[in-house]
Image 1 (tube, rainbow, N blue to C red):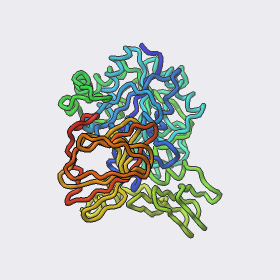
Image 2: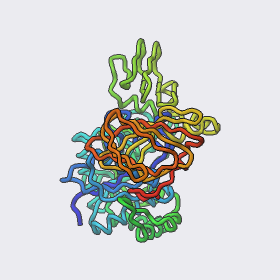
Image 3: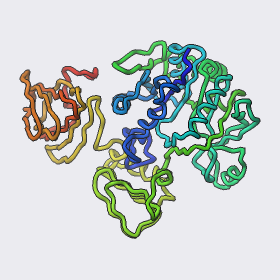
Image 4: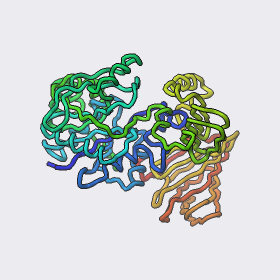
Length: 475
């Protein structure tokens, strides 16, 4: 049995509420828009104290497995496992599978802390005092949730009504309340018994599984079988698809917390946001003298109380107030901050059109197990990309039937194999990859390798990549 808390980080969500930066295949937890680290990486950093925490378990889906591994590696996070869900089945089956993994590795007395990977939290002493209180309460057999003390009459969160106090300092949960309308939210915030439901938990593993078995036996059975039949794949654990797909699609709130008599809540006054809209990003950001939250590639004049971010191009804003201006590499969103909860409406319109659907799905920059690739420019019969290969990594040994490539090294050292012949290239050197040749790119150096790739040919789709050998099992 481990005396340390085992973190379980939920990192599989796909969402577009922070469009155009977040997209279905590039959700907000993996984006860097409030500093040098993504929300997922900052979550890993909050559970990095080895005196308090054991190595974390990440629950995600196969599409995000390599970005999870790479972002964890880049902050030197020690992971116990990366569990891959074969199909989305909401939080109850995912957490049950993680609990079975913990029970196997840590025994009956283990305590798991469930964290979302996309929340913004100030991890100060108040925060860690709440963690310690929650652990002490979970050790008594209670299933603990964290209730955030409201700072406004928010309608985007569910609420928790607190009940009698417990000896540890936590409270019993009296009831859960669905997201209210504005009138009801005004009533709730006026009563200090009500807290925001954060979706974070501290759970004694054995008791949690017992309550799953009691109230959601279908979840228990499917998660247990999926974990028992799971297969290891490189650094990942793939839950058995046939078993996991039999689990009901249900949240842990509905499956367990709204039914169990052992639910407890820790009233929490630390700074927290689920960053569900651009106005919430503005609320937690560092503001200038005019109340603006600004990115690096931004110039404003006579502009107040606004959020202006740009990933690529430089954005200039003149004479506006209370607006969100968000520029990605290929799309710009402009709207009132107060209306940013409704970004989903315009995303639906974009998704409904064949001409703009891709803007809701993918980013010009995508992540690979060896690094990343960004589309710089494309046209008829050509495309220009920027490749970044991490030290020691290699792309697959491959060939293309319909295109040739030209590689120019921008930074670092490239080891390039073409039809069995190896070339070592340094900055400002280049090489041609003829159509049909078998080739591979590796980074033998200690710094990231960056190069420009120019593709030309009759067809440039990714399905023209014929992998012959691959370090990541993608052949």
